[in-house]
Length: 223
Ligand SMILES: O=C[C@H](O)[C@H](O)[C@H](O)COP(=O)(O)O
Image (cartoon, rainbow, N blue to C red; front, side, top):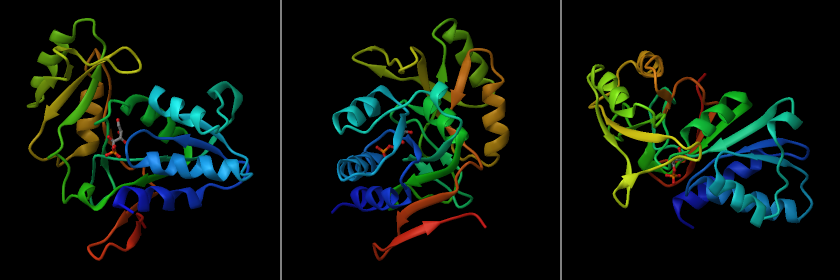
């Protein structure tokens, strides 16, 4: 079993009968969702809220029942991957472009669990370019405002066209050498007109499931 599968499947243990479950996006939480599909097949009763069209498709294939926000009062647990995790359990997310829906669902969840292989654990955030989702209208101007924060944004492209999120927006991948004040940066970016959301998840995580140097599962929590 590879690291992603080990931590992904471990997270499924946190899901209990009757729960509303936020289903994250990416190659690690893929294993959580597959495991949940098996558990549903064996009788577990849950309802999922997917964070992307990709995850919605997977959940439907696995016959995991889904609900809309209008049908639920709260989300019991959300499980998702991350691109970087620092020692305060702050995250960079959005490598797969799903950051906006992921943040809405993580924020709404009573418990937010992150699954990550050991390569995602870092001293401080910033080696992974920070994804910033912007509306297409005036994105050239939005870029200039981002640069004024001392950041180098690159428009994410696919086949020489701007990458479009599930929400029809663009993404700037932003080079920032090291992020010292994640909370201020998160707020500063979101104050720029045209920025919809950014991939900094500050003080949102309840637990990170990862592996240590001996490849044993560790559950990191903020006390
Ligand atoms: O937009 C994508 C998400 O934030 C993912 O959770 C993140 O990129 C980690 O994905 P993976 O588990 O594939 O490394």
